[in-house]
Picture 1 (cartoon, rainbow, N blue to C red):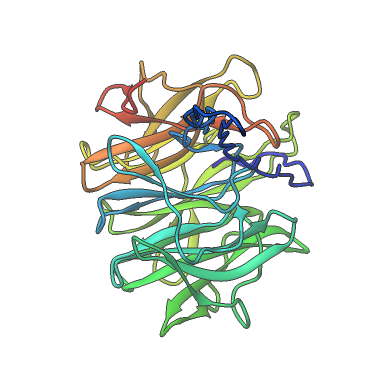
Picture 2: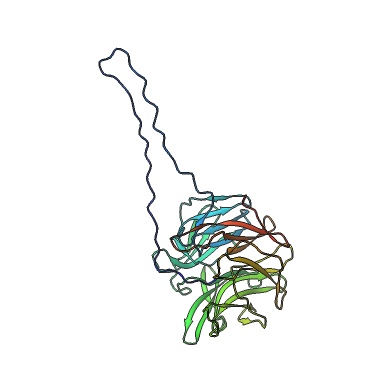
Length: 348
């Protein structure tokens, strides 16, 4: 997701309890008894049909179980939702990470599980633990001791060349923001010496680029001449030991990065005109050396995440129809990229 200003406090409301009252009619002392009255009508709220969240949820494809896993986010901190290509299902796993948002996640083909790291908890505390989703429940892999710095944001992706998961955790240094690179090896995180993100660039998202055979990332770079104070998003490449900013134009907005199964290219979806309302979205394709604007690609107004659905051969975009903020969550809807345009696929 793009970098946004977040409100400091997290709130949630208690769930309302429901009860059933059964009335039994009887007349004491009368020879003719009356049948009991029928139970009073009880209005049971329908189960939610889709996630409702503000921002910061983790969305990852799980090709083993043919589902996209959506976890957490502001106002939906501990919920796990599954998208099966047609509809959403809210799950109730026996074990779950503490509710959080902005936790990087990716699929591990070696174990067949989705991995999730860190994030910010609902109470504002930063987390540094690691979890795995096996299709049914969550399991804690690491408590965070002696691992990457606890924090929100960052990027995680599987590197087929190294045959391991790569995590880039944001850190602040005297020279500006950057990110430390860690590898998941032997059931623990190991830091890559000399593997920091470029100075002044914050890791936002990463994915393996099949066309060039290496990890490709998006980083956020501050621009002092930018009056709105927003990031400019730059392409960064991993060579197996270090990261390097690529000589290409920057993207003004960012909502998600994933590979399009149709063209085999990486696609960035982004808000158009933020913070102007009503917003629209657009898309760019990475050619291997620069961005190519995809024309006539207006999509949902408030995109937040992008996922390659390998089981169904689709590039999915998760978005809301109205701007969301803390305490005003919005329903998450699903679009797919059809080669020339976005089409909504959740029945809307």
